[in-house]
Length: 493
Image (cartoon, rainbow, N blue to C red; front, side, top):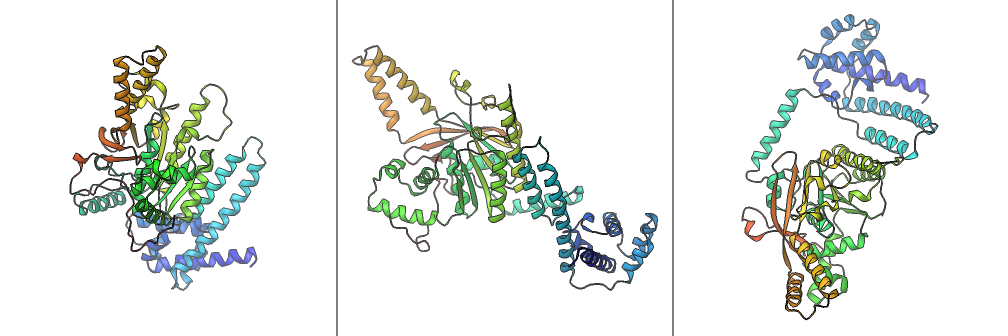
């Protein structure tokens, strides 16, 4: 069909829809869920549709008489309105709406093509910037269909009351978002909610990755999709840690192949179940915020059930580049932090970003992290909805003992009683399978801050609620996948 003929066809479709709206104003409600006035090709139709919207907002009837009055006030050509009134009402409303929306998106794509041509000829623009801009526009177009503009307080009040009603119907279940895996953390945060940026910060070897893996298991248990960007660890090593967490087989046994028949059977069931879970891992060693946005948008389109994304870890990412001089890295981290928050809102999922802390922690007597310890940028503190710090005192105790033993060895004091006491203390702490740990809620945009006492199961690299903080009303938070051996085939090892 030639462009001129297609435009004539679309104008006729638009005329038919507006005629139907004037015949039955309930049709406007259906149309307004998908269309805005800019979706109409013919300018007078845009104006008439805006008149209908204005009447609806004022709770006035949408009919020929009310619309005609405002048409005359706005000097819209009477012949155009007369043609609409002369058009027979249509039956298949959705088909007309779909045709108008389809034509509108095509026009926007054509406009985007012109923009792309102009941007590619701009020598000051980097290719990554152009790609990010294009992908953002295309992603927005692909999800058009709902009216995104200012919302009147009445609508927000009704929506909020409905949400409160649903929460009340849950009874004592405080979870609104995704289960964090820890009872008291759920109580403070109501779980990880769509659009939130959650930062998990700690010094090296505290177990940031292990804690994040613990948290994703509860989403996977309910078949929610999870995306992990592992910039530090290969996907196979990450999966091995997941196997240890969910199968109760010590990580060291998995790494060394020390598996008896029972462990092999358990591992077979675990791997078979894990193979069916919607978990996606990207283990590229470099990642820009532009690439992250692109990959997550594509995955969200392919996997609508995507409920959580994890980045391990934030400081290994890079921005769009081009920055030089003092403060460049801080600006880059600020760009990444803001980009993650915006992406969480756009995709309506929580994003967990692990973050290294600066060395200032090591110089204090109390080595528990504070917000000022976030490395390279205060923007992380500003953008995050929830900031959690992970602390294990045993890590510092072990390091202190190792330093004292090393110093005593250099001084030739291996036979001293004090040296033997140091060695005995070090053996004890290394042999402990369960260690005390703390999850420090340093920022909670929608709740209180506090410190949550948990425990770390070293052989399984698993964080758990302390036994004395569990109760019967809350399912055990030992993190493992739920295995139904009747429904899951085993994978032979």
